[in-house]
Image 1 (cartoon, one colour):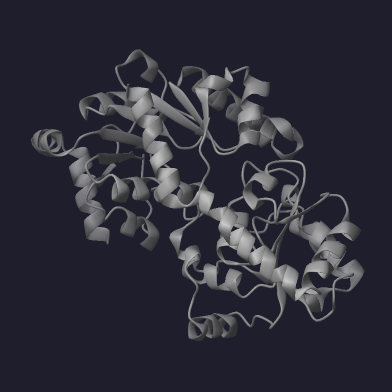
Image 2 (cartoon, helix red, strand yellow; image 1 turned 135 degrees about the vertical axis):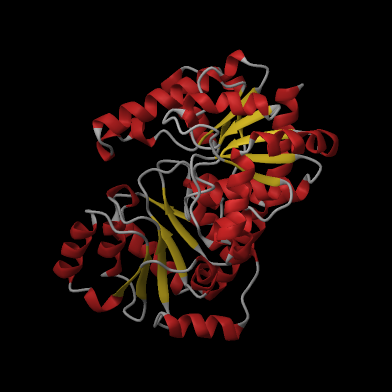
Length: 401
């Protein structure tokens, strides 16, 4: 893999090679689409998965185009190496090493590569791109830093606001990942809603196929998972509200444990204190650094998925749970109803009693479980990759037109 990445780096940095290959590309590809690839080439979760999945599905569904991924560097990892093996996805590293390359100097590379449309996949686009023939699209995932500023450092909040507001004003088109995010863009930035298109996210295709029983048993043994468990997935931070699940667990049937998968932050100490206070240490399992390949199996064996976050831009873990045929309980107050649909259950993010009652109601009612699984799986098809990918390409075509 290292040799392959070095070849891609050589290609990205060699003007002679680039010039010689451009003639072939111009003849072979209908469109040249550029992407802000910082996340795709370096992040193994979250925005990294979103970026790779989006580009990979476009490359598969519309192979006549070339997809150029611009990143200041690349991380060596299986997910990333596999991504760049696609014939029509090409890594583009800096021609110069200026620290402003991603936000400014990359425009020169885009022009040199004859890119027709550039997609900023996470809240920003290069400056001055609006003064070139290149059309631009920006994806806004959320404006949580404005809705809940207390979760962010002052300097980070101001930087996020400056970059995302500027991108929204300068881009030819804005993609919001939920109706709630669209409303926030209009409210906080004063953007005309006609400039914003809601295109939902899907999840990785590995969640869409049931694992064989033998595979599930191996996963259960590898992580010492109990026979019956409630699942929560996400960074352990105050906004995700894990403490509420811990408080509710005290009232949930004792035969069920809580399995939590996520990176720990300083908020973990708050959760630990609550666990100690309620004497629940034996009923909670924390898992970290889970290989992505095992994650769908852990979902599929769960009895209920619980996601009481105070605020989200969308809620990919809910999509993953619905595709895994797991009943979902989520919080009101943001966009989680959009992700979970009418047959998931929603509770106040401040009411542990209501959360416990909802979980117990599902666990005690097998017919309700069957209904929630079937209707949840039916609902989540609106987020299926081919449909989302088609909507995205339609957006590009409208911008180019």
